[in-house]
Image (tube, rainbow over all chains, first blue to last red):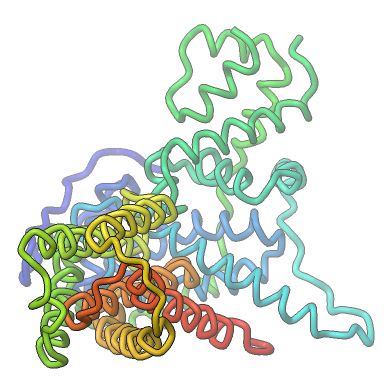
Length: 200
Length: 256
């Protein structure tokens, strides 16, 4: 991602939001500014925010579902909820934990819905062909390994290492404490490390 | 420096030191694990992204963000105080009039502090991504134990004469107040977004049950610890049961 510095947009609190528009790198400060403008009804900011965040959330959904079509459906559901809940983001708060807290809810709701449907369905024929996970072999390998972890540990690793959140951000996104996230991640890395054999 | 140290560093989320980087360079296992995480970010299809952007743009109205955590907590606490004082005043303050100043202060203070804890828990549940300041389970257990201890000390009567006949009207009244409070506070909560529906419902039920207890503390003249702990606190039990039933109805409908 291009991290060349550009003039940072300025935003003041209150009804009149002013901005000197700039594309800016996708760091947290820029994301927060974009989202504040999205809240204020700025279409360009909304589109830019969607463009910058969708990759992260799509990767998160894909790591959990392992199906592109399903991940895209969840992404669409996610944005619908973000749009409806956009007033719950407050200026000055980090935006990524807010985003991932909603993404987590979307993922959990989908998981529960599929389980409920599966418990009532009777298979009468061949299931339709599923959209495949991406062809990147390393990602498939990672997904296979992460699938062997308990859900809470898998989530900690995904948020910290794949999605690049800090401990504090991951704690906020999961509604737990920094210590709890750190412990889950530590256990996860310990388990994953065993898959790669002893050190040389 | 060993592989376990690398795992601790990774879970801490801090940059690797030169010594740790040296270990990774020499340890194939650790290196392969880190390389596994370095896969490129995936992107959704352009078509889907355009559809999402168009849907958002078609419905784009300015919204006012919610206030800060502190203000939300104070607003929730304010709702609680106004509701309990108003309902208590309407139903009659016989309970409050029976108490001495030395009894009123600790009794109402412990309820108020419990309400403050509930307000904090409510904000944690209804605003995504907030810093978790309270462990809900620990806070609730602590508040229950402290409240029970204060009540047992203030009203050391454990008489069971006409226990059910005297207690049931209090349970019904307290539960009714709890459900009314839940209805009132839902207007406040509608502006939020809960990331864990069951936890949010239980927290709301707990807060509502506490409102029932607070109204009874003002209204009920019976100064019997057993009566209060069973029949007044029973409002919380009823509220939580209703919350769980609501959750099952709302989230476990067939095909939903």
